[in-house]
Image (cartoon, rainbow, N blue to C red; front, top):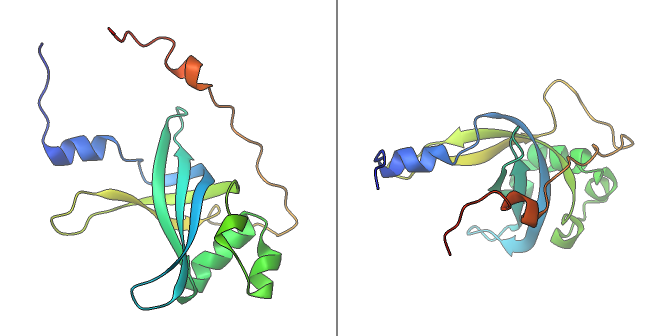
Length: 151
């Protein structure tokens, strides 16, 4: 077998989304307490690139970053819950919208995708705006139909 070797950082960067705005869906959310003792929600976002490839990005919503929490609630039509000051992680599962993704590089750690903001910059969304139409996705059996796996 012949191949082009890559470093660990090159392999990691190959799987990253380029900075930009993408469709997302919250696939997991959990109520947690931060290291500083503050309530927060840990999110696992499914994000699709322009080719329809799925990526997973983690994010955290907490009171210390109210701007991001408000952006998320407006983008996912949860503004009422934001205005009431109550939000549960279970309310977030299945919510969809647009998210701006960035790449974060910290010291010796590999680069990773992070959430810069929710919604599309310059296009404020109202709580009454409908959710975006779902992007068509291939079923699992269609995704792997053309793979030539020798087992």
